[in-house]
Image (cartoon, rainbow, N blue to C red; front, side, top):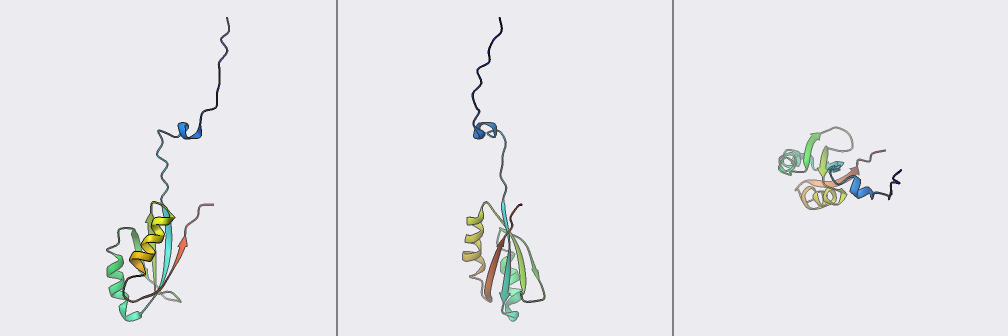
Amino acid sequence: MDEQLQESPIPFAELLKDIEVKDKSTAYVLIEANPSEIPYIMEKLSQIKNVKSADVVTGIYDIIVFLEGEDQNEIGRVVIRDINSIRGVLKATTCMVVKI
C-alpha cells in the first residue's frame, strides 16, 4: 500500500532556526575636524569599541572611520553619542554600507 505523504509548508524561521544569520551593519563616517584636535580625536576614536579603523586623510574630510554594529540603530547611536561628542569634531557624515 502506497503511503501518501502529507506535506505542509515549513515556515522560513523553522528552516533557519539552527543557522545563525547575523550580518552586522557597517558604515563609514566621514569627519570634518578642527585640525589641531585631530590627534585627540584619533585617541578618542580608538577607545570606541565599534570603531574598527580610523584614518587621517587629505581632501574635504579629515578622518574616515569604519564602524561595525548590530544594526543601523546601533551605528546611529555610536555616531550621535560617541563620535559627535568628541571635542574637535565639526561634522560627521555617516555612510551606511549596503549589500546589493
